[in-house]
Image (tube, rainbow, N blue to C red; front, top):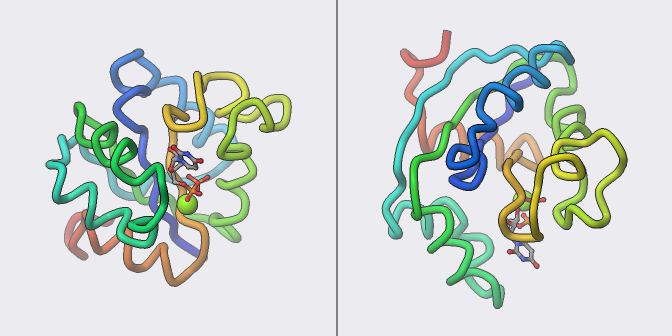
Length: 137
Ligand code: UDP
Ligand code: MG
């Protein structure tokens, strides 16, 4: 069993896509073992995306991520990091495969509805960023 962090980003919450995204995860057998809604501060968004600090999109991305409530979840399943990344699709929705969340629902490369950890190391950091052990069932 493996765990990963999923976020329904502020665009997804704003557009009423929480149920749609959660339903897709459940249908694929990616078990939701923790879930909450929160509104990140700019500082919290900067800490979460610290690996991207030098990127040209960092300022805009952290403004966006702190622009409204998001839903953060821990998913648990075999090989869940890769399986969830596949379900999300490519970062740029124009390049995302048919049937993926980003292809079907995202509106641009930044406002792409969902986040998913990209490795076991990032998953551990990202899960601990939002959840303590007691909040994961
Ligand atoms: N992003 C952006 N412009 C880019 C690349 C990324 O606005 O050229 C945003 C987008 O919201 C993306 C996030 O920054 O989801 C993190 O980028 P990353 O490369 O880690 O993509 P992901 O892992 O989310 O597919
Ligand atoms: Mg990433």
